[in-house]
Length: 168
Image 1 (cartoon, one colour):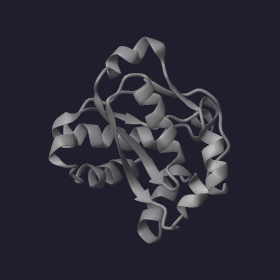
Image 2: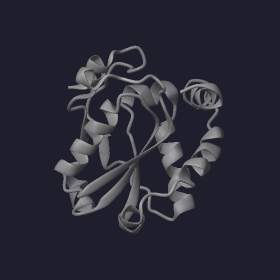
Image 3: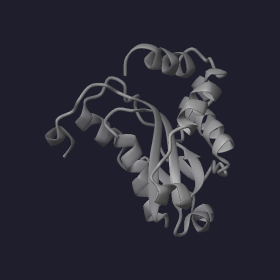
């Protein structure tokens, strides 16, 4: 992630520039998936923050982005279904292996909301994809709770290329 995209993510996430999320979400909503996914996606979910991080930041940047995408695409926004069951360390300075370990098992679906996911294709939204550790754990939790498929949409992708051996 370089240049303007990095500056936008940083301003939103750490500078508190919440208004940026709507424009970022507008750009994300322009992306089209293959025709099958376009027909099948039934709802948008943000990657949840821990309660600690939510209190520190005052908002969830992924939720702001997901709201913008959902509104523009006409898909319902599902919040409070996928939760971060435990606080995790910030991923920014961790190695790929540490990132995987840090978030493994951190996400879960609330039992009372599982029925909403039965045989669905969902769109998971986050701000940045680096190693995909967070996305992988969210997808694992959603599929274990009954989702049939999960597509992932992020505003930016970290530029650093990672050897696949580090992720295994």
